[in-house]
Length: 348
Image: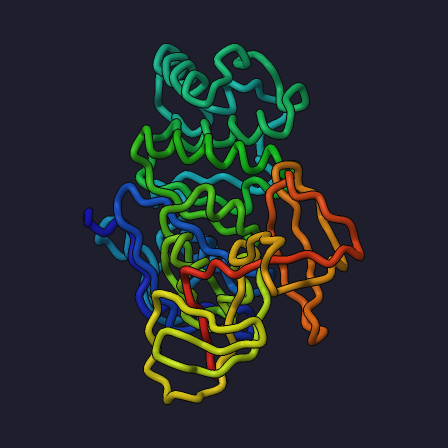
């Protein structure tokens, strides 16, 4: 593991008398891209603002490069923290062309140095011929690339991104997220992004922290968040799925109305314990010869795949993600089987 670049220890922040963060801890290592993921009001933007120096901390401390930049008695100004910022609304200056926007933070640099930096940044973000254009002449995706180029121009160790893709359409968000990740990895710059969008978080980040009520519920890789959530709250928030009631048969198997579900996880609960099992849409695969049947009550076409809502004989519903080649209509009764590699169970 590389050296720690950023450390938040027991941080508390409040607006008036309302505590938003309490005993909040976070560590980011050099070269890492991390994301704070959660619904509005969970405290993720407050964390970002505290790191940037826009929000004071009332308890705890924030360290950058092993130096305290915030605690209850001290707050280093934002401009002295050496951070890059990418905002939700891009924050490009409308009266400046792209080159001048990118070079805005290069105080003291010569015209030649600015020209070289601008050319380097524009090449990096794939907009080498856009230097003389103004913000209103660019698409949303192009503006976001320029905002990233401006943040990278000052060569920061860490970039903070506040819902950076929320103003873009879904397809562009995902594509740009992959591009931004590649750029950050290429230059070796660490980044923290906050978002409510799981697809953005998973496309960009090495590590994701799922936040709720000012706390990180789980700090993990996207894969582990999806397949090994630490509690029912994270399981219900990350990805899609439904919970089925069951009974623990063995440490690795649960009896449900759909039969015995087995997986790689082992549980230490007493045999016979009532368990809520999480079924993901990809745990269900079509099988016309199976005894398990479900009626299609809803379908959402997604091109390469179709998400079906299937009603079981009991009246319970499950989600099934099938290849787009399996084209069923609402009202069809179809056969399916379970393919569960990750047994995810919780008890009340």
